Length: 91
Image (cartoon, rainbow, N blue to C red):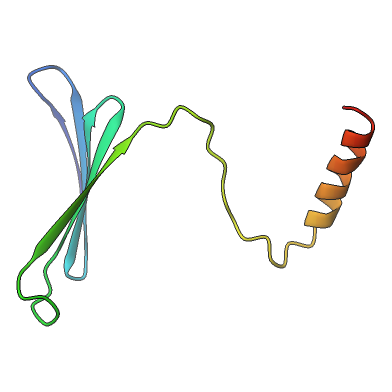
């Protein structure tokens, strides 16, 4: 479920809440450059009381690249070989 709320300062606050089993996950904007990620776990069979953790997430201005496993990626030697040829040619 997702909510969009404007606060008194005009900041559009987006709140996304997801319930998975005994946990509630919430991500909310706190400023144009920051999110607050919070989750609450309620599992009386494991914990004596519910508990909550909160993680502030700031905007990263750097480019983001996917990190993925390349096991079984048979095109990788071809891609890397092509890059080495370009490097050797000074491109």
